[in-house]
Image: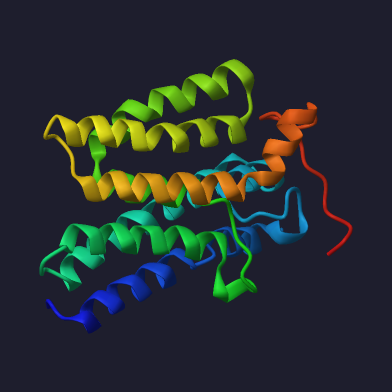
Length: 212
C-alpha cells in the first residue's frame, strides 16, 4: 500500500504496539503493580527492582520486540516513496506509546528498550556500536539511567556516521534523534537525581510506593 491511509495506519499501529503495557502484565503475574512500586515506571529497570531478574528480562525482551514490530509492520504496510521515514515514524510512535500508554492512563516506562528495538530494525550496526558503551557505563557507575541517556544521545552520532559512510540511512538518523529527545525528557527526574547525587544505583532495592 502506498497511500496516505496506509501511512497513517502504520503510525497508529506503531503507537498501539508501543502502548502494550508488558511491564504491568508481567507485574500482575508476579503479584506486583509496577505503577505502585519503586519508581512507578513499567520498564525493565523498575521490574528488576520490584519483581526480580526473571520478570525484568521478560519485560526487556518484550519491550524490545515492540520497537522491532512497529518498524517492520510499517515497512510492510507502506511501501511507497518515503517508506523509510514512515517506518522510522512508526518506531518513534512506539516509543511515545510506551512512555504514554493509552491503556494505563498515559503512564508507562522511559522508552529505552522499545527505542533500542526500533534502532535494531533500522540500523543494527548502530546497536552493535552502542551496546558496549551502555554496558560499560552500567558496569563503571551502576546507573542504568546514565547509561540509557548516554546511549540515546550517542545514537544520532552513530547513525549519522553510518549514513555518511553509506552503511545507514538518513531516516535512521532522524529516528535516533527523535528517540534521544524522548528518552532524555522521560529521564528528567533521573537527571535531577544524578545532579544531586541521589539517583538509585543498580542493585538497590525499591520499596512499595505509598501514594498509590
